Image 1 (cartoon, rainbow, N blue to C red):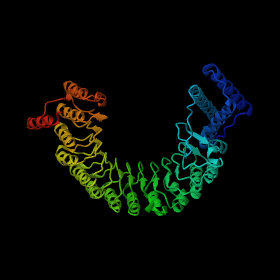
Image 2 (cartoon, rainbow, N blue to C red):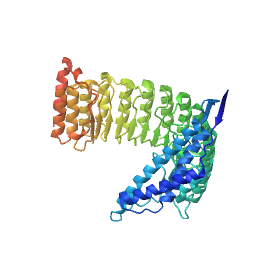
Image 3 (cartoon, one colour):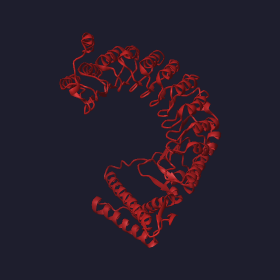
Image 4 (cartoon, rainbow, N blue to C red):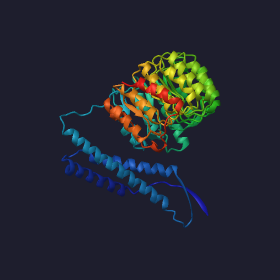
Length: 528
């Protein structure tokens, strides 16, 4: 008969104490024999390592349900949990040995010890850790010291249960007068849904004693339930200027909940919603919120599965203000209709500096409209990404004409289009005409052969501060590559050329006869 059992991890106390004792001896020996130092606190560190390893296995036992048939090895889950316990202890032991070496190296210097940041508290690391109450008390101790005055706290990449979340409440209460920014991204991983949502509720409610201006709850994948777990914070914190819900399962219902709960959208200056499945229906709620946020400066909604209809709604919402500095809508099917709607909004954003419309299927007409709007209405533009936008050779002249008027452009990415040699040469001439301080140019995967690549190299050679040129995934001949390198070497910029490992020299060919004269003229124009 099949039975389902929830494992409870347990190891005899004497075995746990033995592991601590062995780790203490090894850490002391490593310090003395390898680094010539006698380190204090190795026992306490060994106890901490053991407790952290045990908590990882303990959480795994609680959150994993194993099924098996009688007589088929019911001990397997216990063995696997024990292996997890040992593996985690070994990882932490290794990390501590490395840290001891760094401490020894620093102490041999002339007292240049790193000073702790008194304003920013950051737990971010590659070490995924499940916090118990005791561990949270240890780690968050600096926040609970009398007189602590942190303004920014990042709890991300650590998993908080209910007991650990209650410790956060105490910590936030102690620094309430100075706390302004909280990063709560990725703090629910590995927890049962109910526990994770309750912990999120406790931690967000813990902010209520402070005057919070920035909140990040990204990478928790909590959907509408998670948004509603943040109800008290969203309703009672009236000075939030920055709000991030990236990779959080923001569906139509979740988007509606944000619109419903956020009490002061007029305070928002930064709103990030990338990597969700919001769709057009959810985007309607986002657009309605934007219409209440006239001071928006930084809006991101990449990879959110909206189409031209959603783009048009966003354009209308963003048009209520003229403060936008950065917009990132990459990886959405905006298409021509949506692109033209956005162009109308962009024309009225004089402070715009950064535009990313990568993989938005704008097509040649909308790409031209967007570029023209930016050239006419956004004189401070520094970054433009129109890669993978289905821009055909017919659409290049309009884009090039607009680029020739962009006086402050530093980064241009038009990769993965169909420009060809003639189109890329047009873009390079336009960049030279603009006189912009260009630092990065990406024309990879554009069916380039020799002339277009040489045109790009000659443009780059006229920019002493240039940093990065990407010509990869094209059809440049070996002779063409040599000429490109020669031009860059002559300008002292040999290091700016990126990898050409995906260039297919066998596909190189001569330009069409009807384009040859025009290409030669543009190449001459680009000579130093």
